[in-house]
Amino acid sequence: MRVRVLLATAAALAAAGCGTTASPASPAGPAPAAAPASTAAPASKAAAAGAAAAAVTVPASLTFTGRTLDGKPFDASTLAGKPTILWFWAPWCATCASQAMSIADVREEYGDRLNILGIAGMGGNKEMHEFVSDLDVGSVPHLDDEPGVLWKKFGITEQSTYVIIDRAGRTVVTGYLDDLQLTSRVKTLVA
Image (cartoon, rainbow, N blue to C red; front, side, top):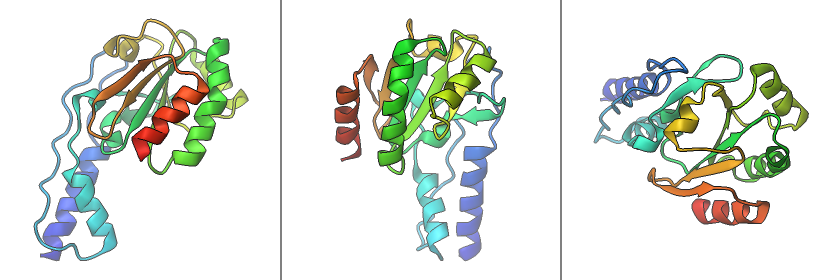
């Protein structure tokens, strides 16, 4: 029985982290299927956490892939199960620069209960790296969406836009939020 739980956990982890990725210029494919959850009691806390992760359904809003600023593949299905903030920013944007402190603060206070993903566009990779470094938001993962594939997927037409997705995968906000509005929304999401 323990072997089946461990195999289910391994399959879930492999599906979440080792899926295929689309190139930044092509739309994402379907989300990987979740491994079936075992009905037996898990043998350890690690197995219990793995079994819980296997039971998470990936919503359509998180079925996309991209590349980090360092060029590593990123699969958004790994964000499923927690509320998620997608922060669309540009490296030359003064409003985005002012939002960086709020993003860092939200990450620090709620990072264990909330996902945050920066999606940079309308600039070059070097400038994106400088923005993240200069504004100290390196604790948040960021995707390089210079071609605008993800911006288009989410209907983003201008920088400094948030897309907030609740735990169930429903988009609850798309647009600009000031610091107080963002914090208020986050508190509602993680309550």
